[in-house]
Length: 304
Ligand SMILES: NC(=O)C1=CN([C@@H]2O[C@H](COP(=O)(O)OP(=O)(O)OC[C@H]3O[C@@H](n4cnc5c(N)ncnc54)[C@H](OP(=O)(O)O)[C@@H]3O)[C@@H](O)[C@H]2O)C=CC1
Ligand SMILES: CC(C)(CO)C(=O)C(=O)O
Image 1 (spheres, helix red, strand yellow):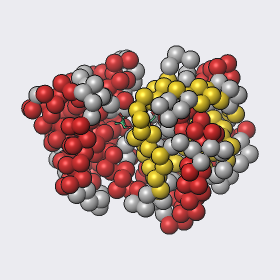
Image 2 (image 1 turned 60 degrees about the vertical axis):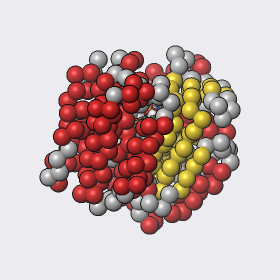
Image 3 (image 1 turned 45 degrees about the vertical axis):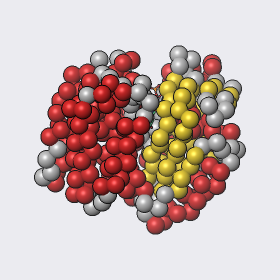
Image 4 (image 1 turned 60 degrees about the horizontal axis):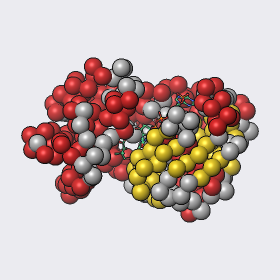
């Protein structure tokens, strides 16, 4: 399978390396600075699932350099998705399907509107990874789930092909037939988890110790459930409970990637995540006051 990775950051470099390890033909479509770093240092993955080294990754800085792609994995931050549209347009015109794995939900309909519904698959990931100073991947969770699936009936073949590739890798891949619901469940979870950890500047342990603080995360889960319903996605109460249990059972020092970005002084995805929820809620007349409050609390730290 010919796979292009747009956004060779923590997620893209990890999954791209694993696809390569499994025998796929992988090209990293990156910007100039990252291209130079990849040429100089290659990619190394340090991971509980086994280290991997890609000394001479295939790199492109323009989509015109890429002759053919079956699949484009998009793993940029939410605030960079608009900047990938020209490349995605060129690659979908060459027949590629697009698998976005960023957190959030608004980008799905945006990509469908801009590129055509047939090209956009649903995707998300559960993993904790980051890049070190050499641009190498530090994968620190024992999970690396890549959940994907068709959003249109025409996409079952490409999803099956990806499933076949994933079977040859260490990635825990799931071809999910109800991917839209999975996307909303992850969106519900991440809006609460990234919201409460980033706003308080605390990992989950101390948040759990203060019932009044933890309650804010619970209320955000409930608001996101109501919001999903307004978009015809039924998240069950037991699924909200499962998300709450996850928050209760994470290691005390666990935190969200957005909170890690706050700690590192990087731009935050708050507009894409909590801001996106607020825009979607306004459009259908749903009130999400806890999410709005968390959004307002994080906003001053968005661009540090
Ligand atoms: N890290 C994690 O553990 C997890 C992250 N996620 C989600 O995955 C998404 C990606 O996160 P993450 O991998 O951590 O982010 P990173 O910041 O590590 O990587 C994003 C990469 O995108 C690149 N990029 C941005 N615009 C373009 C473009 N136009 N063309 C090519 N490359 C581009 C950046 O490159 P450049 O160097 O040029 O700026 C950067 O390397 C986010 O939505 C995040 O919430 C989800 C689960 C876990
Ligand atoms: C919760 C987690 C770590 C799961 O992958 C995540 O998506 C994030 O923090 O951005």
